[in-house]
Length: 337
Image (cartoon, rainbow, N blue to C red; front, top):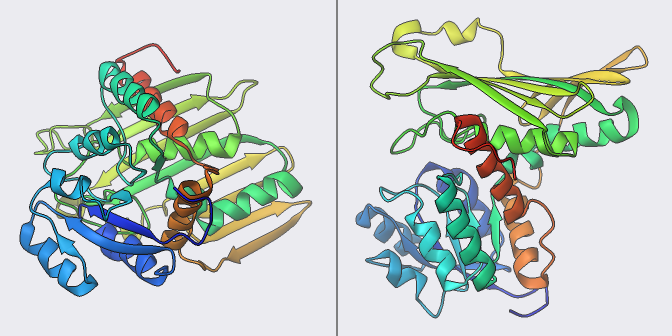
């Protein structure tokens, strides 16, 4: 791959849906000087055909056909298909750069296998940890360094109304729900590591079922605690809101958000763009602009990683660390790394 930022990358997209419509399609179209969408694959063939006609691309009949096309330089894996992470494994074996919007998870053997494949193929993988780029997150990071001081405690509440694969804000439905421990918890774990600037030393969780006999056959509430040493902690409560049972109670329940307690002040975040913070006795309530969009920022980072070799953050190592941390929380392994 050339070492200039002005290379126009030809993109093969795997998996359409609401995240594609809301985040990545608008970004890639606006960034047409850096990206050209050449091929699409979706488990609903007609959906891929319609989108391809709109974008001037080709709808492929199979996954391998898209991955092996000579006019596809990079792979965007955007939404889960019926085969889960099979697309990710198939993509990395080709050695083409991969942008992955899916949470990575699996048993220890699967993680070791894909890590070995990526290392041997020298494949660039950029995971989507979008919360790092939310305006409220960016502002908090600045305040930690300049006003609030080191983080001592994070207390977060995430409430999913129905099935929200990507957390708030954003799309609210997808084809099939993922366990809360995988999504959105894996993204919250990465955000916690990023905010504290180091890895957790301890990790525990307690899950429960609010509605016994739920058709999801899984926890609909998870409580996760991370210890970062010297008394610094992060605690997250993630729950599904069952609207059919509780109606519109979410309107009067406490708002989802994140409390941040630092050595010199405190902050409250409502993702993606609001932060209230206090330091030195003064309180500030800021609503921040989302410009450029999150999709544009994510794809700009990916373009830079592909064309210059500057991977920046986050990296495949971050995704690998989070996947192993999920194993620890699920009790499948005692290893954090």
